[in-house]
Length: 378
Image 1 (tube, rainbow, N blue to C red):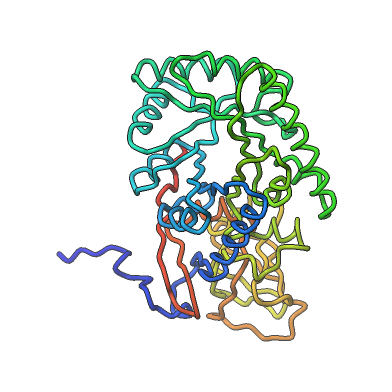
Image 2: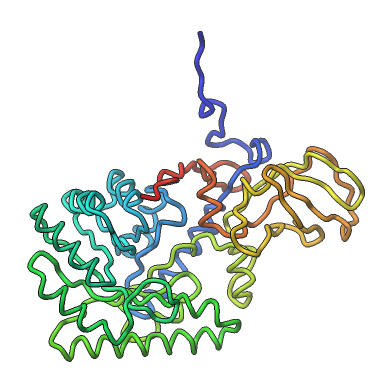
């Protein structure tokens, strides 16, 4: 019996994009690298490191390319599974911007600490600090801890006024090293709607971070790092002198959310992650259906997919395998088999729905990136 796998059916390097089976997740290679270089220039201008967050694409080859283009500052991960995937594929400077809880997970963290050159993790309470110290002692390791401070997102992070006591607790732990602060400023993204509001909101957040640093250092504890920023806030928060490192993740790709949030600096040309779809039905003159629905595009945000190269059609609804497209504003006649390409609504969760990212250049397949850490939520 002959055996075969779907990998043998394509896509292959050099294939014309027009010949690819759909729905297919694409990434414009040249535009993606341009975006990376732009953020690297921001980091250089403000003398901060750029440590890219790979939870967006979950691929070690893309992570290595980001490291290469941004000054060898390492990467961020959000789960231990992502850390393991990156470490097994040669990435050796990793910050885990997430609290590790549970004895078995902490033992995995210690094992990983012995496999890479540099690994730090995140704490935000006495409980996570003590558990981390116990694991380090149990595994005969010295672990690096970053203290997360709540800047206003009201998710994780210690209250600013309590940060000095926890920093002291880390500094006093024989098996831990205090690596500084995570001052994630994502609340600004939900509060600001203009460039000026982003500037003001990020500066105020970093002023709060500065006050926390001052309080910790007043207790005699050095704060070597202050890590901040996502894609929307990094270029603004980086301007404050307290910042040593920015940690954007979506910035090589962008998405509809970033396009709508920051139209003064994000255009469709900057949105490099798209899904190519095929028209499978044209029920009437004002409506068609494509083969990309909620199992193709993550719809965890209010935004819908946006046509990449046209403005006369609108993605209005989705079921699992169907995308409803309103064509009432278009003068064009559509037929079954036509192709439509859409900017993804939320790039991180959309990529997590796919096994493969197809890098394209000049209308052809230029690279293939497996979503290696897909499903690595533990």
